Amino acid sequence: MQLSKFSFVLFLLILSSCTQMEKAEQLITGLTEKEKYQKDNEISDELFQIWEDRVKVALRDSLEIELPYTESGELKPRNFAVYSYQTYLIPGEVIEAKFITDSSFTLVFSELYKKVKDQNKSFERVKSAEGETKKLRFEVQEKGLYKLIFQPEIEANTPFHIQIKKSPTYLFPVSNGKNADIGSYWGDIRDGGRRDHKGIDIFADRGTPVVAATSGRIRFTGEKGLGGKQVWLRDRKRRQSLYYAHLDSIIPGLNKVEQGDTLGFVGNSGNARTTPPHLHFGIYKSKQGALDPIGFVYLTEDAQDISANNSEFATRLKVNSAKANFRNKPASSNSRVVKTGQEGELLFVQGKTTDWFHVRDSLDRSMYIHESLVRSAY
Image (cartoon, rainbow, N blue to C red):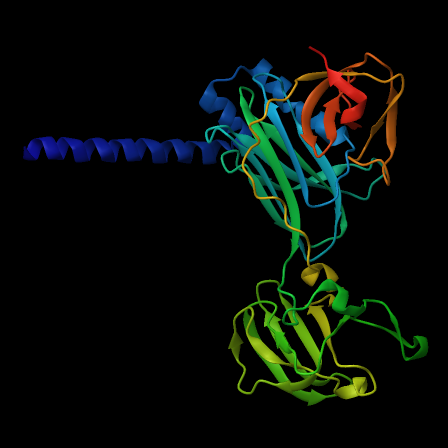
């Protein structure tokens, strides 16, 4: 009996050792997540190259979306579907993207790119996620145009649902406050044009609690200068300080605080004594100076948290109108017409968002078309 137990333990040790050696081998050889996928599934170089080249197509696509965004569809084996979406982001915003599938075993590789300032107007990758997770999260530090790409594995065969949203890094700094309470923004003129506003003003009733937008240590509390009664909160993770000014009063003995803790109360101390009560909120980053705080606190809508849509989707559509406009956004207004299609034109379905189909044409161009302009090709 003891020998049997010993043999079992020895087997586990050998198995663990093999697993560790395999991981070590992958690290030594420097395999990417996609190359590991090819190796683990014994995919031929020719087939893998066709699949990998789809990212080049996605980088050429120019679909634009407003966040939050959702889309549903169905993946088919060896369809080589790839999904690409562009959106403009600013510092302080956090983009979160999920590719939800019925099958938990389906791999979907997620990558985020940022447009670089060069003559070729190319994109550089700033974040990638493992295929098993099917989700990506990124905290924006530079404003610009970002492109999110989802690439399902070659043999993917499942319904799916895409959810993309953005949210602020910090908690709104005034208790129960909302975006409409912001009455003055970054860059507004001050003192007759002698200086610019280096923050945002959030108006509220006197005595409304002012809260810690993030966890950190209090570096200063007191009354001085233009800001009157003020609190400085240090965010060590991001190497920046949060500035709360014009308070009516400050909680005594502040030191280390958690997100949501009360720091003080809205007032109009300092040079704000002739204005209605409000909080001046600013952010100062080491070696950069003042930052526009709007992206860090501006409240955003949430994406619908639902599972993959199980309804059936036509894989091919035909234009049923004599003239049909294809657009770069799923909307008739504030969108660009990519091309005009003709009746009978065949389209390949990527998915659907509200009443717009996400399709590719015979030239492999990704576009949106309204459901009223197409019919099933079967």
